Amino acid sequence: QVQLVESGGGLVQPGGSLRLSCAASGSRFRINAMGWYRQAPGKERELVATITSGGTTNSADSVKGRFTISSDNAKNTVYLQMNSLEPEDTAVYYCKADVTGYGRRSGDYWGQGTQVTVSS
Image 1 (cartoon, rainbow, N blue to C red):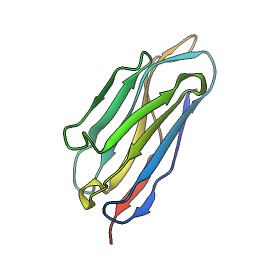
Image 2 (tube, rainbow, N blue to C red; image 1 turned 120 degrees about the vertical axis):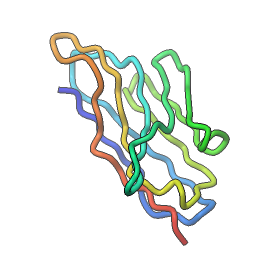
Image 3 (cartoon, rainbow, N blue to C red; image 1 turned 90 degrees about the vertical axis):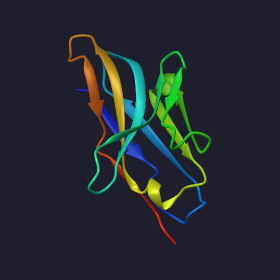
Image 4 (cartoon, one colour; image 1 turned 180 degrees about the vertical axis):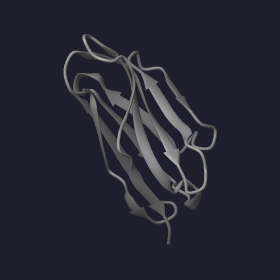
């Protein structure tokens, strides 16, 4: 089993910053890519940003210039630095890992989610 544990969510005022972390643990797997998705109440889950094991990144237009995704491959950890937060960024943020398993399931694994609330 590959487990993803997220941390770093919370309540922040508009214009503030937060840093999310997601660590993957387990054995006999290789991470191909990791990413962050979010789901606001009443809305579908949407992509925020992704990063491959080679360092290629992709992000939604709505967060470009404000959010930065990075990773530490040695620690199987992905980060999301969120600056200039807006109330529209309020959502549950989920971490996803695209994994190749050796003797275990390959595919997508999801974290449990962490709440980010932007409000004054």
